[in-house]
Length: 182
Image 1: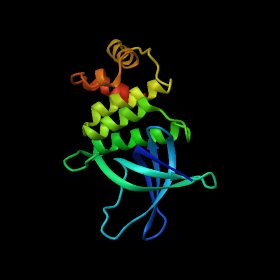
Image 2: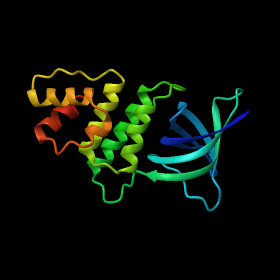
Image 3: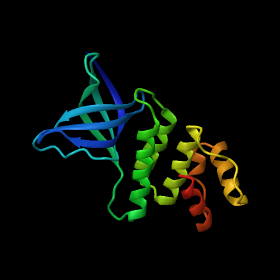
């Protein structure tokens, strides 16, 4: 048995019983893992889109680990968000969960996701972050028939997510073309 301190983001939650929950989490150092936690009486439930510091207890005998000593850093607040903003964020979480293998850390993707949560980005910036994640995974083309869309794709390939966040508003027709790539 080993204990590690780490930072993580909840990708999916499952209720095992009234007091026990199972979480699919994305750790900065360890990648995607399944962990469980006992809920205490006065404790706020953990939900999808939360960014935490915690301690994880691992064991070679099981594939599900235990977390405890949790401190919430940020959550992707759904208050005052449009349906499209929330949907874009959930699609990004699903892409990360489905594309990254278990126990395969991706610190750059983790940082992209943590910025989406901590800065409470809107849907078009999450679209750009989603495209950056796809580019990191080597699945984003850099060619397109539309000149503006192609320039945007090349920009996403070339620059870090911090530079991409500095972009101003993208034209609606380009947004629609980029959304079709997801």
